[in-house]
Amino acid sequence: MNEFVEKARAAEQAMRAVFPPTPLQRNVHLSERFGADIWLKREDLSPVRSYKIRGAFNAMRKQPGQDLFVCASAGNHAQGVAFMCKHMGVRGVIFMPVTTPKQKIQKTRMFGGDNVEIFLKGDYFDDTLAEAQQWCDREGGYFLSPFDDDDVIEGQASIAVEIEDQLGGVPDHILLPVGGGGMSAGVATYFGDRTHCIFVEPAGGACLRAALEARTPVMLDRVDTFVDGAAVGRIGDRPYALLQHTPLSDTVTITEDRVCTTIIEMLNLEGIVLEPAGALSVEALAEFQSFLRGRRVVCVTSGGNFDFERLPEVKERAQRHAGLQKYFIIRLPQRPGALRDFLGNLGPADNITRFEYMKKSARNFGSVLIGIETNDPANFPALFARLDASGMVYQDITNDELMAQFVI
Image 1: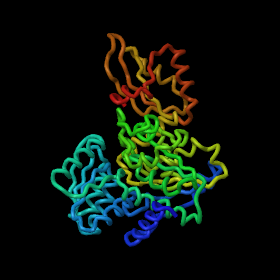
Image 2 (image 1 turned 45 degrees about the vertical axis):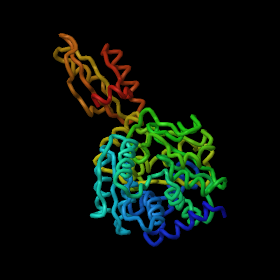
Image 3 (image 1 turned 90 degrees about the horizontal axis):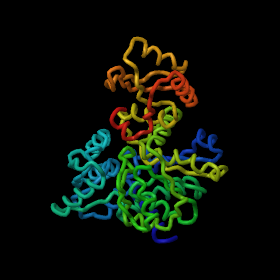
Image 4 (image 1 turned 90 degrees about the vertical axis):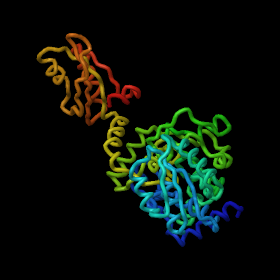
């Protein structure tokens, strides 16, 4: 047994004084769908509804004389640190992005109580991280990185310890969501070459893939914060050192809209509440279906801190990805009956979900924003064919990101 495995097992044993192992559950629906033996490691059922409590616990237990901990977090690490600050009776100063969902801020306050102080700084995690480090340098305290810390990585590896013990062995494949890389590096290092690790990133925050391509950690030009639990612009140096030999073929990026389909599916079919980052590993199953068939597979559902105020947006994005929702701008003549002519082109399953008169584009014409929802993606080509045949002028803006930001 190598030194890292021994430390991970020691961390797992120590944290039993604080919380029990998270469940490892076989999922019948996913197993039948993909023809594999698929298990979910339910980190969404930890005391703080994410795996982050593990790294926070392990790093903080190794600083017995420290009474002030400082961290930066998009939400889940903050909750883990807050929980442990209250449990250990120490003070915590927590920096979170201004864009952090309210649910995560409220839960952090709840877990930490009077032991923590929260500052909202920066629009993106990397800006928040810089603010927290500067405060810590100025005011003192122990800075607790969410992922770029050996003790944190070691603590996150306790996930792998539990999986091995709960399965009575190792899985053939394990799918790991990647943000800053702490959990994925810890689990992959623990298992070594005993299992095949697949690393899953959001398309708007694929910092591991960028680092592997550049052969060094690099800062992404742009980060999409929708998958807030994995929206990191630069992978940590320590996680990268452990993952630098990962083949690109073992990484996959999932679009933000696509993640939404899994959130909705797991909620509706399984009653499982996953945040966007927590759904990444499950959605990635489809990418590797051919060689997962007949194998034992574990998906780490990394978190369930989902703000239900986001549900309408998640549903909308899921429908857009599935091809069931489209938006377009139509140029309607300013005459009686023009709208009726347009409505006559709709099929029996086509429903208008948005209708907004935008402006006159000419003396005799006006622009209208139309949202259409249907029950089969094949209905849209038929609709557009009827619009073309009737001579209507329109523009599909569903996948026009810049246009959608303004009008959808």
